[in-house]
Length: 494
Length: 112
Image 1 (cartoon, each protein chain N blue to C red):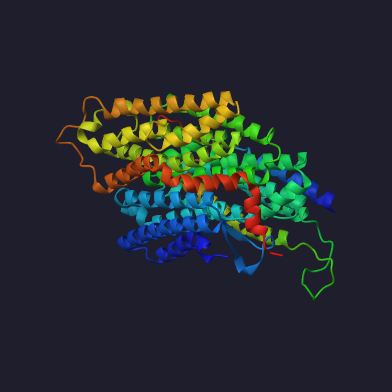
Image 2: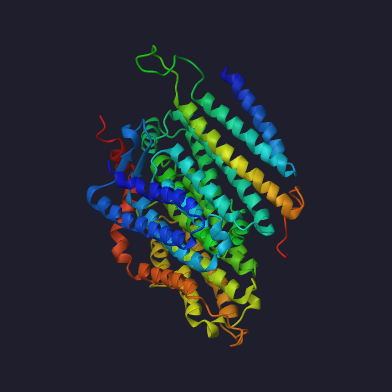
């Protein structure tokens, strides 16, 4: 029992509610929301260290012992993601201060961001499947509001598709939950896992697991990503960066939980299917990333490619592969936020969205240009930046298990990512400048600071991978040994 | 009784699927509402329909009816209510801006 573990959910919600009442005081809202996110980041660092020394921490709400009550479970994997999500949100908030505009800020932008991060953190930490559904909905409702904030025609048009597809995905989630409850009679994840292991994963349970796969694939953008590029390219930059960094990762997290903790008995069906879906996702994502000239669409398709890459790790499912995927998720949250922020700043500075209409930005904004170069290298997996560690671990285990097709696709995708971003780099950042000295809009410090912070993040994550190694290997150990998680939740109750 | 309810759920899902595939956005929204009713019934049926007394310890005789599905449905109803309210407002705003409630016209092209 540790009350701390609920704080990453409770603090943002409570502060968000308070901020609703502070509507006219924008400065105060900014300070409070930033402090909240920094506070949550600090708390999750502390909890991460507690987990290393004392093992997995949990909180049974209302004192109802599992499997009867709802509970929160903090293991290393969940806490690493909470930590990264909170840091990325804090940085995106700094970017929003000087870019989002007073009109949005007055329309409850900060409360919605806090509700969004509460839903995200809650999804990471919960140990109950129905509670996962509730946290998903909290996150989605906040994201619906954020994607429509501003109410431009194109935003409204894209958000209708986004909302309807997510309502349908939630419906499938409930159907899968109903079937699972009907077959196993429990919703506690550890308890489900135990019962599945006892009864054996028969075809009925495998079918239910595939319904869950469908639901979370829709949320994660695995294969069923057709809704993603449109809805991620319309909202304001700070919101798009939050979406690109966080929302798909929640779906990925849920997939990892489901298929390492609960449905790990039939890898020849489920994990094979995930592998095929990941491969196809990568191919389609690559096509998308190469097909468009709109910077925002290229960036959105890069999200899709990363989803495919991370799930290759789950499809292989050796401890090394899982470890690689965890590294890559953390890296991708930071790098994707950075990429979205850079793309947004580019559009803001030049006023056009296609990269062939921009040129020579590095002459006007040198720091900005080099940051773009760093994120390109990082996403392509060039050492010593952060993408390298994840790629090498996933690649290594793909060779060990003989999954050569997935291996080829994974590294082919790196080249396409590099090419799609270098195209932007060579066209828009290098070359003759189109902005003369007089027309040059000075890049606001408020836009540059978050970009530099995230750039520093991706470099230090690459160089400091050793520091993170203990946490990540602990997370991978818990994921590959479901007994550890089950013992932490159900053990010692009798 | 279970069979009857399952058949009812089937009918609801059929109706909702038909509605959600139409071009009119209001019909799509009604479709999602009917979908949610179907799944609520499904959860209720999955917990087995009434087979015992009220689940009040010491107040009633065992066996008790499973009370969890009701709690789940209540939560799900509240969420689907909120989402439906939001999506109706969204559809209205989109209608004001785009001047159409036809999804084909709302499809949009990339070259605007």
